[in-house]
Image 1 (cartoon, rainbow, N blue to C red):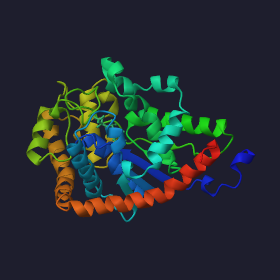
Image 2: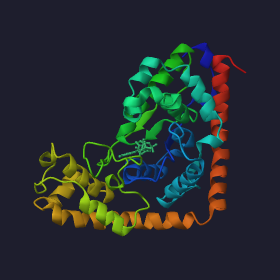
Image 3: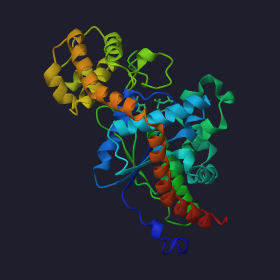
Image 4: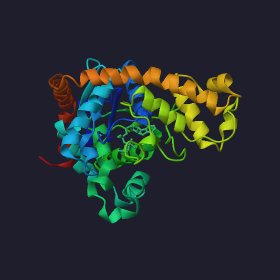
Length: 344
Ligand code: AQP
């Protein structure tokens, strides 16, 4: 460590979790199993937990303002309905805490073009029309690094699709610390794993389940009622083989692998255990079991979401209180960053 970093009280990293979800549409089962369910588990471990509705990320693709506001509230409601406790975790809107955008700019100046050009999510989302994509979509990972590092977060629970962005967050922290000869930003640990780290589309087992997929049949939304859930699972793509008794039998069978992984994650079981139970069954027998389990887990969450959405002022207050707390942590880290880089 160099002299520039000498006794910096906020340079001692405590175990702190940060993660966020975009209010870019209704939440999917992929968001729930890959991220939110684990957000809730981590708030009961030995961590300070900070969770964010990342609305500034959502506008990297055009959003209808009225719908964006509605989606942000619905997302906050779904966090709480899934078990996130605002007395244990900090929950807020990204745009309500200025440090995100301000540190995001600093990191735009740390990250390299070559790093950004390697990001597969940009390539997937911009598609063939990359020249027409927003600059924000290209710079998304630098803002994500700011979201995390504005809190000196040490652990970030995310789905497998975000792994590359988290590696970039680590690269940004390392380059910043190196360029300014400090030991200021932590090198964040991704928390990825479990049977549903990447939930796939119900229509194509090689594609991620996503809120923005044009086909509603490709995903289970957290607000789907029991009939819709049953119908989507009934129509989910499968193959002509029965279910194996061991994980090896799922190799090369993307759709079967996906449905079994979802079943395991919903029941907090391992894939091995599930296959001991369902091995030898046909999809016609297994799908009703999956429907029953999905409804059992999702129905209470969607009911609670609907109840929370009845009281918007209360929800808004909760988010505002969260933003005040988030600001108390991130503002001193931003000010110290400005001090290190020689502005203000
Ligand atoms: N299919 C998935 N399986 C497991 N985890 C997933 N996540 C998203 N999809 C899956 C995780 O959910 C968290 C929030 O993601 P996000 O909304 O911020 O962005 P995303 O990854 O781009 O999610 P979507 O649903 O695909 O949104 P759109 O369609 O708007 O781009 C992250 O931790 C993510 O890993």
